[in-house]
Amino acid sequence: MKKSIIILLLGLASASNAQDFKFGKVSKEELQEKAHYKTLETNAAVLFKKQYTNFRFSQSDGFTQETKVHERIKIYNKEGYEWATKRIKLYDESNAKSERLSGLKGYTYTLLNGKIEKTKLRKENIFEEKSNKYWSTSTFTMPGLTEGCIVEFEYVIETPFLEIEDVILQYTIPINNLEVDIVTP
Image (cartoon, rainbow, N blue to C red):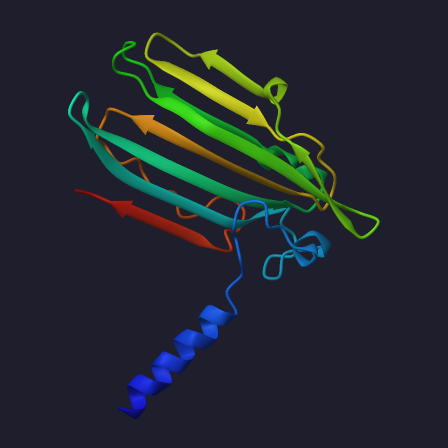
């Protein structure tokens, strides 16, 4: 009994200290951070990444897979700017059988005179490229980069193909918080 009460209290304590990673809720503390707490020499760090994959069913299309991605990345210096560009490969077999990117939104957050300023991702920062007859690449580059900024983006990939992509658990930069949910029928 005592053991279960201690575990419950520890769980509540950690939940109460958990950071809020809701889209658009960037803190001044995150923006004021000058170096990563574990890897001081890193140029950038993923503060938060969430990937949620589920399957939907409709009478007309059958099962389709939907993957929602939310990432928040801290850019410590100019060498970290490359992490503000994201390339998403999409398979395009034919018009009836193709993957689709939707719901893309993003912001770059900076601290200016003690206030959080945000710059919105615009259409001119999003590029579509047809790699070959089967693949296309959607690329976006976050605007308004400065040393110490945070970039945050969200998007959804919808696909008729029912293969779960590999889940990348580590980049060449640290990932502080990672949530992956895969819900299958």
